[in-house]
Length: 176
Image (cartoon, rainbow, N blue to C red; front, side):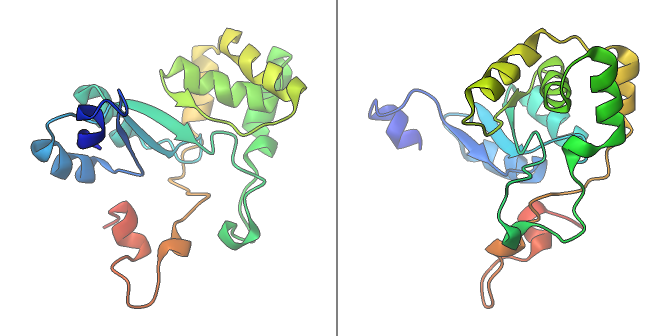
């Protein structure tokens, strides 16, 4: 990726699914530090240590599955997976603010300084998503959302694990 920058093929580079450990291992070997780390990030998987580490290194965070990725394929979805847009805390905040649960989730990311990449092709939902940047969540709202963290991955990575391959679900995410 650094060669692509040197060749003028891109101006910015980043990484995806890097833990703080993987970033600490990578950074001493970089001529050009990654500008962004794209990871699964939502109220059920807040990754506070990673967010803090990236902030300390000037690496911007981008959240994928910020709305819970309810349309993800069945082969990556646990049968008992929670539906983030139906979470009672998120719904209650949305009802109190007169907005949608998706807007609450996106506003939460914006207020934390994290870019979110929700999937949508519906013009009305695209407008709703953009309007979420104007929603100001209170400290009480933020505290309630902080209480939802379960370190729960909606996309657990098991589909990357292959017999004889180098990865386990634990080593993908650096779990103890």
